[in-house]
Image (cartoon, rainbow, N blue to C red; front, side, top):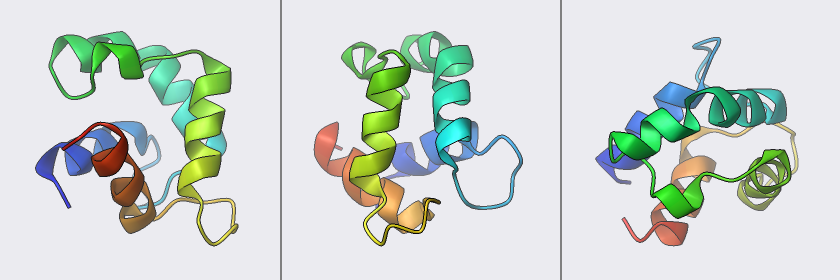
Length: 83
């Protein structure tokens, strides 16, 4: 798992509980996405709208429990962003 995945996960984990909900992913990417892209944490093309954030969540939620663990999240973003 990459360090960038950990940085991005922590930035999206708004309530700091160690998991991500759909609302956190959408809200955090909406609020922080451009800044994270400018800092090089996420590729600029990776900052999309609410639909793209929701789709990212769905792709990462491998066990269907409606929350993302770091492992689920990192497996997707490492592959998707080429980290």
